[in-house]
Image (tube, rainbow, N blue to C red):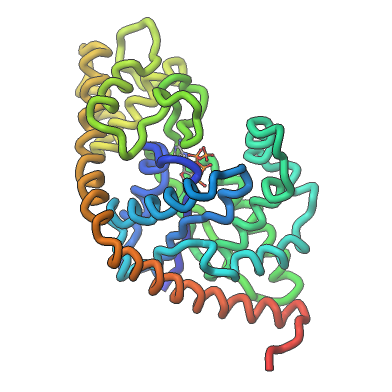
Length: 330
Ligand code: AQP
């Protein structure tokens, strides 16, 4: 079986961008062809300062959301990254096979460093190495992510190839999987920026747990342009983003959407986009409410899947430790 790995950070409430760009693809890819690992990547989260109680609460909410959105915890390994020490151990080793110059080129680091100028810590700088370790730890073949993570996938492949070049075929070389639609959902308030969990303006993002009124209101207020034509064009980034969202939420092609709204105004279109998103999110929200009541069930998944992830992680880790020359365990 091919191995699939992906993860998300519990740095805020998940947005529609996280769902359409990543989670939706995870669900469509989970089938018998793949052995899947879906992680709540809490080690990554502390590269930005977090409130501990809040981080713990969000991590659990995120893990619950994975299941509510449709990932089967019996078939897939859904677990907390911090419960598998192999992530950090492999990350250290890979740090020693990664160049400062490579990390200096990472655009996400530059973005996050400028947003968090008061806390540009070494973890933020080596974030891509931890991400490489996450992926390589499971001998991953496929990594479904949004477009913004493409550069991190490239550095992961470079590190793996470098390591394999020295020690033989230790790691599988992973490929990114980037969906055709929804790979980059933009902010509703500034279509030049991606929709982000940590955006300070709550009107910029649709959160997966938003109530129906807020969803419709945010779409109604979405920044577009003064024209009134529904055309898919880079000159109309606001409308383009709404077409992408509608297309992804309804599984219709962009051409079908443009035809459907030919001659209609922005008001009707925005309402239709809001309703399409509502009908995707409502069942997920209902399932979250149901699952959240069953503490023992979620606890059981956390324990069993944590152990399973540890088992596979340790297999790779022992191989790597031997290759680099650490003494055998007796
Ligand atoms: N706007 C987006 N459109 C499509 N895909 C997106 N992803 C994130 N934003 C969009 C994808 O969601 C996954 C989550 O990755 P993450 O939790 O590591 O965080 P991130 O990429 O840094 O996402 P955010 O929402 O922007 O979080 P903050 O605000 O904390 O930085 C990835 O697969 C990503 O590609």
